Length: 308
Length: 159
Image 1 (spheres, chains in turn brown, red):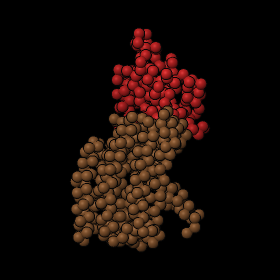
Image 2 (tube, chains in turn brown, yellow):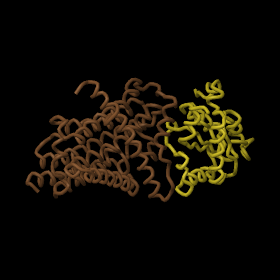
Image 3 (cartoon, rainbow over the protein chains, first blue to last red):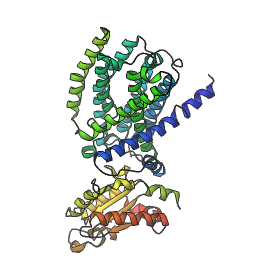
Image 4 (spheres, chains in turn red, orange):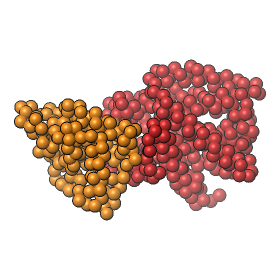
């Protein structure tokens, strides 16, 4: 594979352009389903694109006394991370032989980058509300990463490989008891990783008025919003690939329909949880993830080890 | 049609600043954003930070202390933005016009792009006003004050 091909894969398909467009579509689905839950009409299909385009023509305000360089670079960290993660994920879904050993670890690390970008950006903006948002984001990250990594171990143990290509080609872990438990853990962690209700403490419109992103305007805010939309698209894809991989990558058209359906169900579940729960406090979230969720994840790993 | 204006009118994020209003306009503004009226159809959403906003909604007569804060918030808004005054108070001051603690209504010392009068205006009046504002912006009849009179910007900067 030549350098130009890799570059095209990164920019066009399945990298930047594809993930961005799919992410915008997913965020429209999110807003439309939210509108349906609240029994209203909701925004038009191109609304996420309009929002993004509008932010690109706005001024970029840089707060006085903040770390200007870091403030402007921070959005790009998460953006690059989620783009690369999505590219690796889709390469392994399209061709199970195309990836390298240990790419699952790389993807897990890359998906931490958006949260890291938000944290760096919030602290660089020298705003007390942003700092509170940033520190909440750190606590949330510390809370959900442990059960997430434990739960991701279940498909790895079942497939006996840490290469994404082998994982998606192996029989679906969701058919076993340990797989179901791990999937539930992953869904809870996904909600926190996307920082949406009930785990939206870092942004908390009502008390922190935008929280970590409070000082961002114009193009940097657009990149943050796009990153978040891309995460909303990529995380369900990762979960579907890990837990329903075998059912999705078999030849023929039916597995692809199943894959799309699983992805949509995961997105819809996220949106419904978001619309029907109130926000929890930081200590409640940490207790929740380190207590019951980590416990279930540990049980799932032991069950997977025992061959269940 | 101006590309920037067209882009702006399709996605208006609103920041609501209540200047010691009697709360009736504020309640009607919140009413207009509830599911029944569904302003998200027009791309209008309420945001919590002025940095994310395209529209600054003013309600109430700003007194001498809150007017300083209001100018400070206005100076932090990223351009291009609109300033819309809800209700009679920001336009004329109504019965607080000659009050000892305010320097007249905001319309006398900042550039307001549009007024939606009423005491308070109904949500329907606000939606109608919003649609008229969007149409005026697109036809060029209304140019946002921050674009038309950039020299005024300097006076917004607070000490």
